Length: 293
Length: 305
Image 1: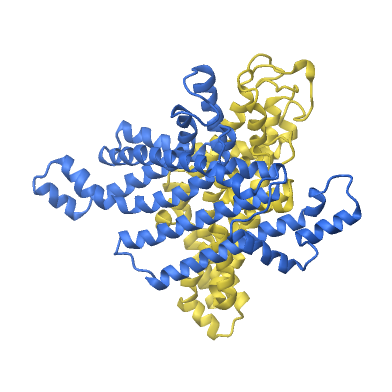
Image 2: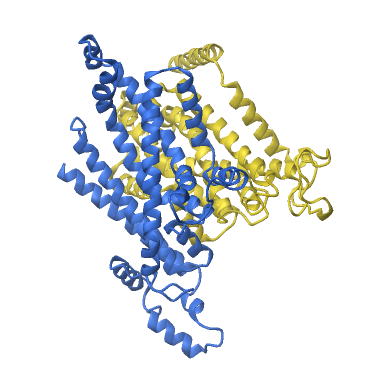
């Protein structure tokens, strides 16, 4: 009981510390605003877009941006509304990167914790596989997986997740190796606590910071990878409202209809930069030690 | 040291084996190669005959072994579309990719390193801030989009530069820049931070106290010591360049290995896919291995665990 109170007290004071630190730090407002807009667009895409993103309207095709209020950002060759496609593109980007990164993060973290805590043959095997994945450029790995599985949303998610998990596994394993030797873990082991419980209750809470920083720094990479695959025609079905596909569709008519490629590219750049800035800030804020990594 | 090199070689071999297994499986899981090769009027007997000729009737592990043995000797079979040996098609494309990577690397080093050093020397100046913005944009903007926008600007509107294909020196400008931008950004940031660190050290302060000119202090004493992380980064980037070329080669219609790889994927031309992916993977592993060894050699302070 006494122990319980002590733990709560420590937690409360740490929470207070964090609150104080937040009020003292300068939050990165620009990235936060951009990311909020992105998430709102993704969540409310059907409500926010003025048109259906796949609706073809041949009479109103090839309208330049800022000409009519009906199509504020213009239309493409098939008369599809650019603004609506951009908004639905935000949804595609958020959905794919969230699921892919989430999958990669969970798999990587679990395997990293296991490899770090158990070590031995299992740990070595996990790390050799991770090394093999990280031994090649991400786009090559993703391309091979798309060849293996074929196109489609799920397969893109798998391809991205496969390139991501290894980074998490390596980082988390490194952290776990040092935490494993700390007194409270050693004592828990002596007290007969089972490995799953030790990993979950004593080790995992200590890798959460690393996890958050790594995740936020990976988002930009994941978005760029997904966009590149879509651009190369290895991603979603042609015609889907995805930013990479939109840039690719505008490529052949770039001279007549510059807006088709320009807007989705700007959207990707702004979102990736916002995530990168936010990740940098989070890293400096949570763990300045990670700067060098 | 020897043990370290051996373990790195071993690790690279395992990675290559894994890659070859996945590529081999992707061919076998995504359809019967015999069906792809046969003309529509072929009979069942033809089919059986071809399967036997190709060795498709043997156990899968034996097939993988044969595939691996042939691949090591550079034999990847014949291209499905042109019937030429995949190796010959690949060899034709390698010079274009190597040239582009070399020019890109040169550009990244020649622009990235001096700009990074100047940023460090003139810290917080307008130049420093401008370089930072340039670097951030280079890391954030997708290569394929930057390429298209540059084609629009310099190729179509200003008509200064050719926008596709391989040719004279002017053909290199746009693709090499797109390829180099993100690496240039990395070089710049790394050169800046390691230069700042070195400029703050005791021996640089001593060189200044000794009365050496600022130019000599920066370019001789500080730069030499700031170079070490740059060498590693350069090596890793070079390896990445050879493969990162896929997007750039596609947009600029550059006849290199990356574009060949993508064409192979689009046409389901598996011998070409196998040849390009395995060769790229091999070169990537080889380069990073070389860099790791070079790193230990250049900086004897590094001790391996």
